[in-house]
Length: 82
Image (cartoon, rainbow, N blue to C red; front, top):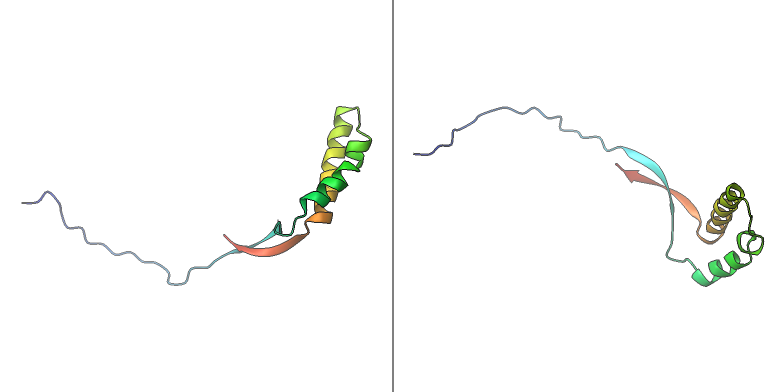
């Protein structure tokens, strides 16, 4: 004899499943030129004119990296399945 019992049930599932697409911003890193990025970083204000105030340093860091990345690695939008 078995200690398992037979269970019978009914599961109702909609046959159409909707896939939601979300618009995301990505960067294509395959053509990233590290040497050109390093050069532009070395002549940027972040390196040549380093702010002494902590909050100014943070603003300079964020804006410099944002500008350099936008120059060297372009953003593009794509649809992503979620």
